[in-house]
Length: 310
Image (tube, rainbow, N blue to C red; front, side):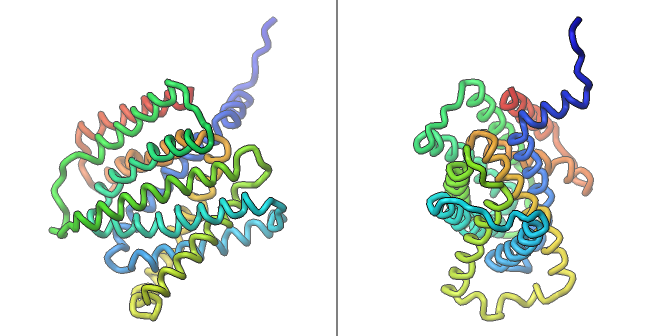
């Protein structure tokens, strides 16, 4: 007689099988929440300061978590440690700062459109340097997912607040962000794949590398002389940044590292780039009207996501 497995066991098998993909989608959801907050903070706090503050807050939280779990001291070879640190320098220090600068120049919708280049960069780089070969179904899923995202955020909408867009700077910063995050993701995948390095510890190394390059960048550009930190001295603004950093940086990058450890780099980066799809229902709750075009784009992307889970 055929044995019937309890439903809870089936769910656990699914979670274990697709934990990398599910972590990437969870990170995308948290980044969607955070992007709304960061966009509103962009006019008050400079990108460099914002990136530094959220990074430092996340590092403190990760250190506390590692101490509580007894996982602070980890033995790993210097090569993998260097790859993780360089991944943070590029993906977080340079990539996130460039992303915030693009947000301020061309707005969230167009910046997210530029960000959809990152999964393609990752898939190509992972194929060249990590020999990660994706099957045709995976490539079809990546293309469908990205097409749906581009379809959603490429919709023509009136500008809010009459803000003047700086297209030249926005495109340049968007390209820098996409490429830096792609190289950072591939380096993380190379360091984490088939090792016993825990994603939370790798998150700490990445964030530390990112924060150090932000400090160097800020000192070099003389942006940490107190001139740009005025808004942060407001307890309310600092509280908003701190709370958002818990979700976007502490949890978000931790989940991203889990996805890069347990899923192919191209698939992990594609699923992590679905934030615009999560923004839509959030925008509805905030009173925005969602078009049929946007809804159609969501269904296209969901079809792509379904292929990636096969």
